[in-house]
Structures are given as structure tokens and as C-alpha cells.
Image (cartoon, rainbow, N blue to C red):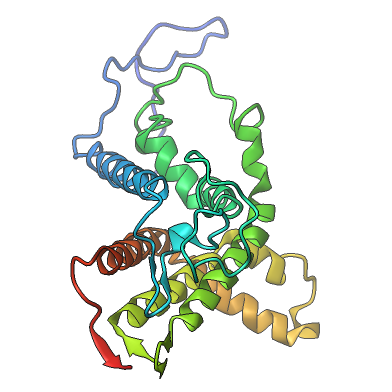
Length: 274
């Protein structure tokens, strides 16, 4: 026996078919769909405020005794940099609107802003476009990422290369921090710096652009076994890209706060060696 689906009753359109049922409610979702975008809004806003304040404080970013340099000020490039913090010279003037890491911060911000996960996060949380699945967009018109300024989201693959360079610089900072006045040194600050660098590398490598670079253009994996293995590794990390995005925000803030606290003399670094 066969059954025939019936159309809902309603006014007929010009072709004689029934029109779609009019639903007055903006969404039929009854769960707390607004909670995730609210948490994202609060989390991202808090981090941006903290990072902005720290970048323009121009102090408490370097611990000379243990060579701890916060990632927010690396590399330190203005002539305002304290002695020992400027590994690459000081080509920039000390105007207060110019951050110490003026050459790297814009690229770091660009990499985060154009990240596929972060796009989803701030589109939903800040622009309500859309705020959640099965919830209408707050904007009456949708143009995607084909017009200014969102068309610049397409440069994410190039921002990835800049992020790799920045990660290398942060790695160098973590290595330099093992040098104490008496030689080799190791403290809690080293653990925090190295942990932050590891998380930054995992976030950077798990990027969709990295996955495409490693294996996206290959037609025969069998002819490129090494690239296939790395592509497989990146693909596994890619499934954790969202978690790594949030973890690195936390490790960046923690690393900066710890260096600031030690530099300001709020407490001393816990030393294990040296």
C-alpha cells in the first residue's frame, strides 16, 4: 500500500500550488540558543579589552633577570624598549600610539580575524549573522564575503605565512628565556612560555590553510608519502581548531599576565634551576 503526502492547506499561488505556511514566530527553537553567542561575545570582548590595554601600557613586559618577554611585546622594536628586550633592534620611534610589536601585531590580528572559526564566532556573537542555527539573520540583506570589507577575508592563506613567522619569533623568545644571569636557568615562567608556544604552534598548524598547503593540491597521495603523513596529522588537528583557538587566547593572556606580574614585582618567579 502506498501513501500520498498532502500539502498543508493555504492560499494558492499563481501556478495553482499551495503557498508555504506563514510562521509568525522568528524561530521555533525552544532551547537557550542565545547562550553560546553570548558567551562568545563576553569572552572575545574581555580578551580584546585586556590585550588592548596591555599593548598600550608600554611597561611591565620584560623580566631582565630571566629574559621573560611577553608575546604582546615581541619583538620589541621601539626605542622605548628596555635594555635586553630588543632582539631585532629599535627602528620605531617611541610615540605612545605605536606599540612595541607594531610590525607583528597587525599580522597576528589579521590571522585571527580571518580565521575560519573566528569568522563564525564573531559573525554570530557581534553581528548576529546569524546568531544561531535556525534563527533568522539580524540583517535584511546578505552579500556573503564578496564585498568590502569582508572580501579581505580571502587573504587568510597569506596571513598564515605571517603567523608562522610570528610563531618562530615566539619560539626564539621561549628558548632565550632559559638563560639566567648565572647561565642556564629554569623556572615557572619557562613552563608558561613554552606551553604558550606549543599551543600557538598547534593552533597555527591546525589552520585550514595549512591543511590545504600540505595536501590540498595533491592528486596522488601515494606519490607523496611524507606530505600525506603531515596532511593526515594536520587534518586531525584541524578537528580541534576551535578548541585551540580558545586555548591560545587563554595561554596568551596567562603568559602576558605572569610576565607582567613578575616584572612589576607583584611576586617572584618560582625558580627550579638558576
